[in-house]
Image (cartoon, rainbow, N blue to C red):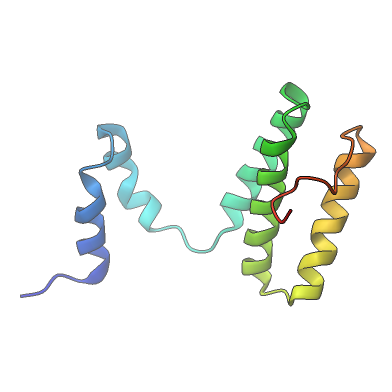
Length: 107
């Protein structure tokens, strides 16, 4: 008898996980949506800005990932996605990250 899709995927990836990750897998499978991921990424981006503000490539990857997740979460049209990215780029520029529009994830 075939297993439900979730169980089959869980077993497929299980070998690649550490023992601690396997212990948390059931809890992770129960999380719906991407709100928690967006919040964690925002916190990581803030930490990155504080600890490695010169790492523009990584900053832009983080901003790009947040834009994609928020776009997905709210199903924003392309125009709104571009406006969100522009707003995040302006935030980076306002805190002293130069050339916020250069070398970003869409460049």
